[in-house]
Image (tube, rainbow, N blue to C red; front, side, top):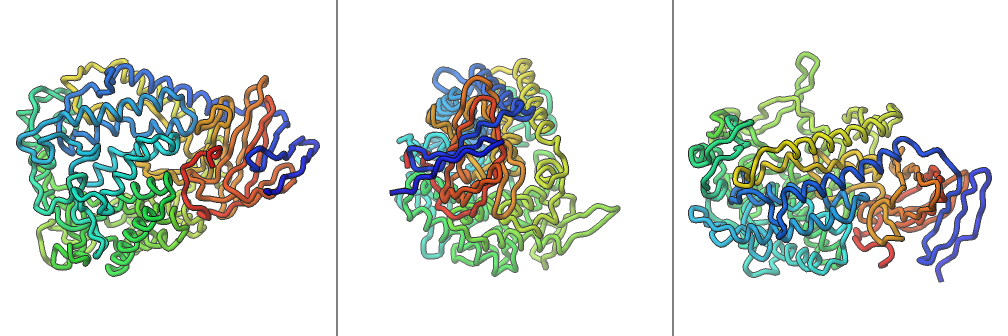
Length: 620
């Protein structure tokens, strides 16, 4: 029988520890506190976000869930952009947003598959019978595939018992584990995904075409956001179509593994979190370990291509820095008629190694990312007081040159977001040295007590501005392409993720929710903060975290379940409040808040102790 905790009453804080029906420790907080400004702003932001998303859905979705725009295949303004419009709506619900937000996303996702299933192309082989097959993109690169799946990946936070979702996640993961004979994307012998282009139709084992990237032309005038001439005005697409093709003339090398494919591990992590089936974990670890070995073989630099023979640079005579979106991807973008440098080495590698950390707790995966940035900082230059890092490796004269490689294209991108992730995953104070002590990190370091209020007010301002955009939008469906509405998504979740969860993601590109806490409402039996409950993460350390919980309702009590980590991957060892320390020894704690009550709780934690699990607490 599980040990029941004794009833304790502590004065003057009147904090009581009680057993709960699920044998989880329960803390009852009775100490009255004035409702903090930050707690009221959190609730206001959740309400405003939810209302704004409802308005967006009412204006831009039809009754079928179709996004009201002109559909096309392509990576510039195609299917991934259309559904990416809702990228953080499932996250918003998991934070405490309204159920209507979750329902609107589901309607949009189901409608999206149907809408783009109706697409037909003639120049573009990939979409001649629709953009999706078995509800998964036919073939694309994971920079774009992943963008389009961001909300889908996080749906499990709110809806893990959804039978369709579980089936789809398993099916999609199976496409990268050779469980689908029509999608032989993975080589289990060499532990690689065979092409940068992959999906439900398998790997592309030929050179891509510009039509694969750009799609067919469609009649009409649109805001062509990738073309500088299109800023603020409508352009005839057929007139500018040759320029669109010119955007991608050097994107054609496709065969072999690419670091962008590490994003496919999100499918394995999701399937494992839903089912607990070890095969998904084993595949992610196997694949990421292969990339770990390849990175070690190239001096700690994550290679941007791996040949079908399994060797770094195997498609380019050993030149691991080459390949589409690689270290040496310096090209002429014919759409804007200038040389550009598009090295996306962080885009999916952080996701992949972070997923392996989540599944295993092995900090050596963070070490791979740390060493990569160490290599860049070893080449830094300081000019006029500014630190500059090389953004590229290979030959500065261009992608097609086969001369000796070197670092080039120094710039001010210090990869601050990625360094922040490394620190939060490792909690090694040495990793913090390169991270600016400003904004949220500064607040956690005790340097800006007013930051929570300022951040929440800023996100409320963002919602207001987006709603103003929506009200004043002059376009109609026949003048919108898929990427146009990306900038209209009103959901602002950054501050809520930081302040309530102790989580972080870089530039909104959230793949996996790495956080110290998550919350559930046991009364309504759903994910997210209960109504009237405010949560503020005040301090994070390697083995502890400080959290304040408040019930701003002076009339009604509230109950919240606090979880250790977004996927219960962490473990609460104990909780201390009012000088009383009580063992928790699990990933959940139930907190009962009397009307108008609040308290600070200090948790002793073991991070990454538990296997990721998306099951809600009452279903365990």
